[in-house]
Image 1: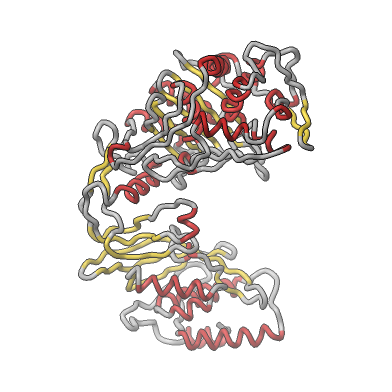
Image 2: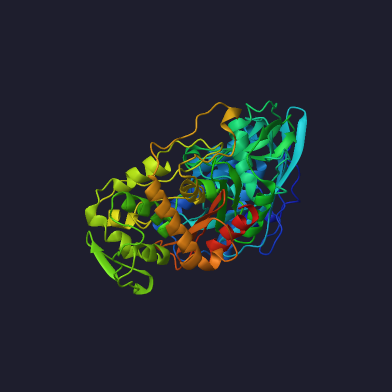
Length: 556
């Protein structure tokens, strides 16, 4: 709005309730009582803006006046229910108008009051209070959000940088808010001992509980309640992000669903990731595939099950099994570990450019020598690693049925340098802690058992299988390699004090743009296999190793 119009409106009397919607009062440094304007005046301002833009394109940093005025216009119009006026104050009027219209119509949110806080540069925080009404059922709603003011492309006019998260921080672009009968009845998830699992007790399980409800809500015997929820759009669904309940107006009757989680191990997992925003861990029963614990620091995206990250040298467990089967390596035979090895136009090297002269394959595996593996690339077919991952370890088949959404690993067929990099868990190879815990479980148990959080007997689903197992000789060597690494190799420090039948492998995965690599660790003790990752943490033995070792000590 122009300064003249703003001054004129500020001389008006205090705003009153208009059309059943409370007038906005916005407090905070740089903000007075927000003036109100409707769709017509907003359109006039927009027309004047376009006319001025024809003569001059605004540029340079936004002024404080531009930021406060733009935020004022947007919030005032939104509160008044003027979706056209609010949308015109954004840089994507079409998307903004659709979501804001749905805020009242689909989400059934009324009596909205928006209160701005102190701007921080171009960002303006604000609080939202309102009432959600469905029939005779109502519930108060309150949350905090924020908007950012930017210069619009083309004319440089200040506008709200439009994203769905402006309306509610839980929204991603393409998502929407809906109030109505819950799409899925509530689920009372139980641990393996029959005790209820709640996000209050296990904070990192929020996304897992959402996923269980989405899959089993209509199968667990419950009845739906009335709720305000986030309904995911195409992009969110493609990323396997579950719908999310924001507010319960009335509770449904929950059905019960038993999981395989072990409460003692889950408590340990929660403790290990607490305060570590980028840490994720998983523990499995090796002989069955039952998920005993899963935890993610930050309590947001379920990286432990759905992450897609280069696993680094933990992938050498799979590669080693292939090389042994093909008679390209044997644990006690001499094996090259030079400082460098060139393949496919790339020059590969070891960490700190070390070399092992006249060493065995066991020594190379334990010290995680990259060139010991990449030096075998010229003798391999492009699809050898892909086949090994699928046929023996059950990976990269996209057919796991765990009970919630998962990413089942990816080992694509690659050639030249990328194929060489894939042998050490780089290139196009992608995994998560669930996948790598399963790799250790396969070594420990002697065959692949698809991980699962909910028993297949609950819904009659079929679990994924691998087409073959390793030979007894290959399996014995692989176990010895992991055992030696746990005792004397890069995993020794983390595994100190973890007694019994153990094996481990560390990993560090370089990622473009990161100062520190992602640290990985996979291991087993007795019938428990576990894996973890700490993104941007550094070497796996120092970062992910202690997390995994704690789980093995508690449950191995």
